[in-house]
Every structure is written in structure tokens, then in C-alpha cells.
Length: 223
Ligand code: 5GP
Image (tube, rainbow, N blue to C red):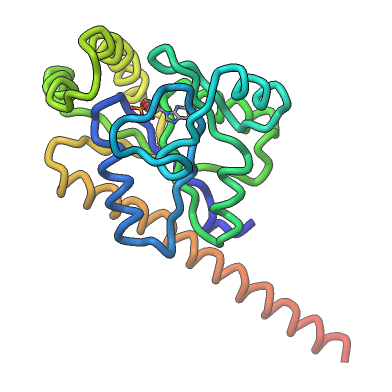
């Protein structure tokens, strides 16, 4: 698989602005990136579309598909089951695009475990953590969103604390983007992506050139 198609895994606590950053990235580079549409058992929020934001499903159906081995990872997040199917990733990769995943920290851990066990052959994802400037700022944003009930906000904040702790541990992510000011965070994210994928592209080209030179030399030697 081309290094260009390494999936980009974006994680971070609920309300940190992952979705906004991802939508902007996909909007600006539609030919280069595609979104891995996850499955979830949570009900759709107003405006969310089936097959675009999520595949909305039931716990029974999703669990059966997970048991059948169709999922790269899954996790219970804020009391609902979420998961990334192999098909969702493959579909984006088959279009020749870099697959962007928006998953929680548990999902990150299970992708890492699966990779360590050789189950995600050739996937080699890049892991990016979107961090809030502080937990207080995150709380304000989560409340300002007004999409969740109070008990859900409290649950999401509790989870956020643990996620942020994990996110800041050195080596857990390839890159940390602090989302204080959106434009700045977006530039930081794009800069990282350009750097990673662009330098890999060059590396790939260099390897190709080396191979071509080697083949030419062998041809000459044979003559
Ligand atoms: P929300 O319900 O706000 O759309 O998402 C809640 C959390 O679930 C977010 O942190 C998001 O990253 C995470 N999430 C969304 N899809 C998946 C998935 O397929 N797998 C995992 N592990 N987490 C997901």
C-alpha cells in the first residue's frame, strides 16, 4: 500500500472541536481525504445524516457484526456503542484517498492493539490528538453546544479528563494539536499533515527512483 494512504486517526475528548477540524479538512481537500463513517447506537442529532455522519443502528445488529469480525475497532463511549468497520475504511482507500477516522481514546488503544497483533496489516495509521486548552474551556464548549442533557455533559466531562490525561503522555500520539483558536489549530493540523504525507511522498519517489536505477543497472550488466 502506498504510504500516501496511511489512515489519519483523529482523537480527543467530546466537544474539543475534532468534528469541525475534520469537516474543514475534508471540505478543503475533498480529493485527498475521505471520512470513515462509523456505526453508532446513539440516536441521530438534528441535521445528522445516515451514511454521512454515522450509520445509525441498534446494539443487537452492531454487536452481531462486531462478533462476525467485520470491525477494525469498537468501543462503548458515553453509554453508546461505536465502531469502525473494515468496509468503511476500505471504501475510502479504494477511492485512493487518505482515510480520516474520528474515534475516542479507547478506539485508539484497540487499533494499536490490533496493529501489534498484525490484524491491521499495512494500515500504519498516524495518530493525532486534539487537546483542549484546559478542561474548563472544554466544559464551556460542551455546555454551549446544547445538544446533550446535563447528565450526558457530566459523563462526557468525566471521560474527557481521562482522555486528556492519556493524550498528553509522550508517545501515545504522533501529534498533539491544541484547539484554543480554531484557525490556528487547523493550520497546525494541516502543517503536520502536509509535512508527514509530503515527506513520505518524496521518500516514496526516491525509493522508486532508486529501484529504477537498480533495474537499469541490472539490465546493463546483463547485456
Ligand atoms: P458523538 O456522539 O459526539 O458523535 O461522538 C462521541 C465520541 O465517540 C467522540 O469522541 C468520537 O470520537 C467517538 N467515536 C465516533 N465514532 C467512533 C468509532 O467508530 N469508534 C470509536 N471508538 N469512537 C468513536
